[in-house]
Image (cartoon, rainbow, N blue to C red; front, side):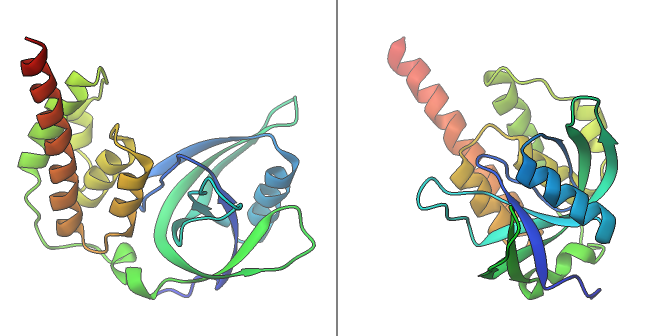
Length: 205
């Protein structure tokens, strides 16, 4: 496994769950995160994303390391970047510093499979069919033909990232180690939402 840095700058963001092999466009305007992005870009282009909690400025223990794959400065001082997901990490401790942004000591050992090509064929056809119904009922449009062109990891992670489920459910998916288990959990979550929609429709009628 490639040696990624044990101490990384981290952008905590509420409601954003970010997975390996997905792309996350970010519009950076706060000074502390402008500093973070510029420092990361000038060093190794690596930064972490983690979901923040509502209380005590705390964050979840599992996030995703990404590499800045596109960087543009706007005339009004903002920075527009694209972050490409590499591997998940577990936060061990926060590193005290004199910077405006936060840095954490992290460990990647639980997520070694994130950077290994997954040759195991995982059947996600039931998940895709349920997701199509779920997205339609939720009023969301997705180019399913383009989604099918992705490799199976990208496809499943993209669905997990953009599905209209709760942040806690997405965090659970992020923390699930194996891809086949992730498919099972996401399918169960979507099935529950579809059951709720159908049950409410029947009740109203």
